[in-house]
Length: 78
Length: 185
Image (cartoon, rainbow over all chains, first blue to last red; front, side, top):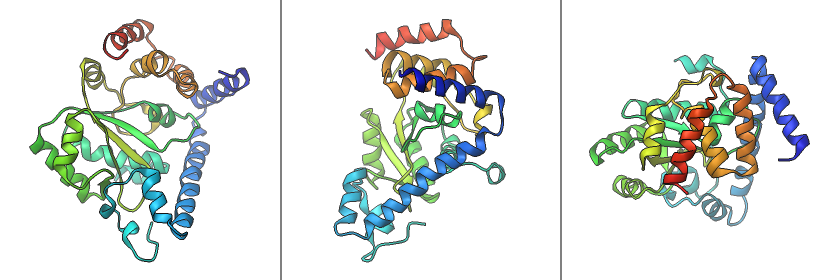
């Protein structure tokens, strides 16, 4: 493990241990990852072969299970 | 419902919604990376790993129907028998909400003595703010340090050792590491 990175992990873990406010920053971080991902998926769905790429990317075999993969025109990821 | 006032992030809410359903029907545990993430580790993941007790087909059909009714879809198949067959062959199946490809819940049946040990020593972790069952911290540390060993896993272990220092039991960790060597390596 890189020493500087290990130091950063240790500092953050100690902060989590002693400061209840860690959760707010952590929630923002996790939500931002998924918000960003959702934007990319929506953009990808609008591109040529976008649906096929998503199906391949996530190994979706049950394509009928997902309404948003079955619309002619892309959409409806809520 | 309690979770509405908890201010959970997307991943934690997904986990709690899924586990609330499973918990009505059988024993389960959330394992691996999400244990560290829910405990404050700042890294991304696309899936949460869950081990459930082995149930018979009729019981699984009830669980699957409940998941479906609650808006979860299996990525591999819509056929409950096929999904059950995956599980009994010790393969994992993945569930998502029907309107999103992520996050995923990767589900496996307990397959050996080590998984049963985890189910029997499950814990709730107050720090996470979640009401779900996790595999205990010493099991997580043993897996990450003895079996998985990637930089990401070793960093997770470092984080867990600090935030749960009062729960760390080296004797139990060593016993589990022996079990891992015997059953998984």
